[in-house]
Image 1: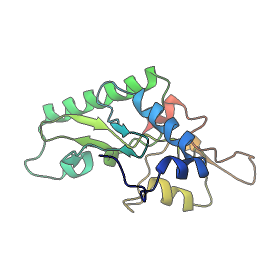
Image 2: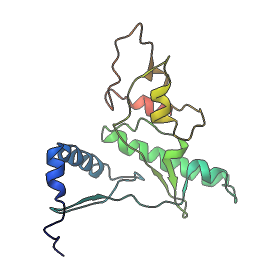
Image 3: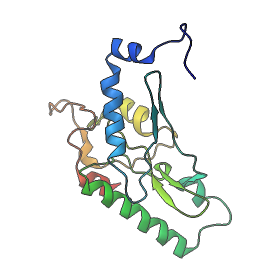
Image 4: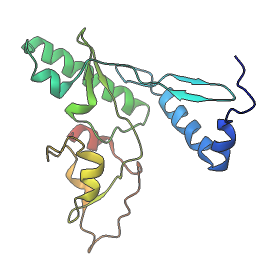
Length: 177
């Protein structure tokens, strides 16, 4: 079905704001991470639209751990194995997640675990004396729990670290999480 003449051409809008390059960059990053239990997003596009779709998964790990029937020990081991394989798959492709926590591990009704929320839009380094970036990017649930490697925090008075987004993340930072 062809859009009418009064339809908005999304490509013109994207070009105007130079967002198309960014969108294709995100698409390329998501398409390269197919592997063990890494949730990537399917894309649909034509000259008039660009849709990024996210699959529906029943639970995240935090919710599933508190839901009856509680997980058996063998089920917990299976989820841990899948999570380790997902992280290994990312690291083999030189991709660092940067925010592994129970809210970002999705669990299907069949017991499959998927690692989600992979993005380089979060700051790599956080000032230790100003929690605003931490609350904004890493504490959406407002539980005040921290799963971030300690080396990501810096003292702004003694370091000239930048809060570069998605840069200089190390694999060890994922392992800490």
